[in-house]
Amino acid sequence: MTDRLTEFANGPYVFDVIDSGPIDGVPIVLLHGFPQRATAWDLVVPLLHDKGFRTIAPDQRGYSPGARPAARRDYRMGELVGDVIALIDALGVESVDLVGHDWGAAVAWSVAGAHPDRIRTLTALSVPHPGAFLRAMPRGQLLRSWYMAFFNLPKIPELFLSRVFRPSAGGGKRIGLPEPFASRLYDDIVASGALTGALNWYRGLPLGTREDRRFPKIIVPTTYLWSDGDFALGRRGAEMTGNWVDAPYEFRVINGADHWLPENRPEEVATAILDRVAARST
Image 1 (cartoon, rainbow, N blue to C red):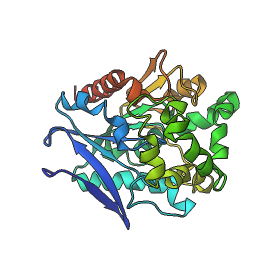
Image 2: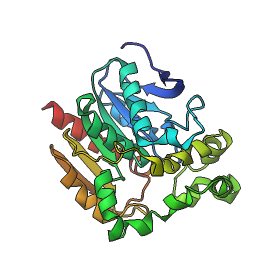
Image 3: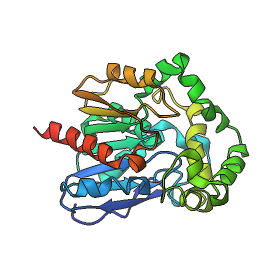
Image 4: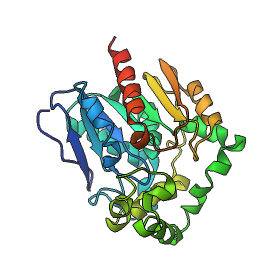
């Protein structure tokens, strides 16, 4: 494909895409997390472009204005995985190097597990393999994940976060985002109307199908990047993730970093991606 991709469709839903870098470069797909959009990768993509790669960063389901279904069941993992496969199809390629952070990492693990033929390499940031995540729950992860239950409440999370994310209340700085990401959080998520769709990723979890609860081992070359200062994700799940990968695997720890790796540690993130892609090519 030689044209820029500005949007793609999956059924009735249309997703916005930031397609940048060398148009003839090998495509790297970047999946953002909560509560962010494709611009979360702004500091990472120039480093990938400098090495000749093309980057494809979508605003995912609930975030893109044309892809905000109202029903919680429309945010089950199978639907989110289907969106990524539709994006790969729209690119006109058989497979891509896939990267995800936070919720984007959870989706990336699931895409690689369900469709290994469409993924050349996987680089997951912060969130461990879903099987490891669940195994870690009774080992301290449950206390870190309390907010997931809160986000399943109706309406209250919207009221709470719409106030917390206001610039006058601290905006993204309240959750540790650096500038310029912190000051634009309210406009990107609340003012744009994306907040309920973003929260529906959590609300769709209890409605997962049997297929959604299958956690196959990953059989594509994988790097998992975790930070020891992550407030939301503990060490036990991170350390167990390797048990769920039956392929070349590397576990990298960024010491002293918080949860927001693409924004706060873009150089380390880009290096991890490039090293994984290069290892596949040799």
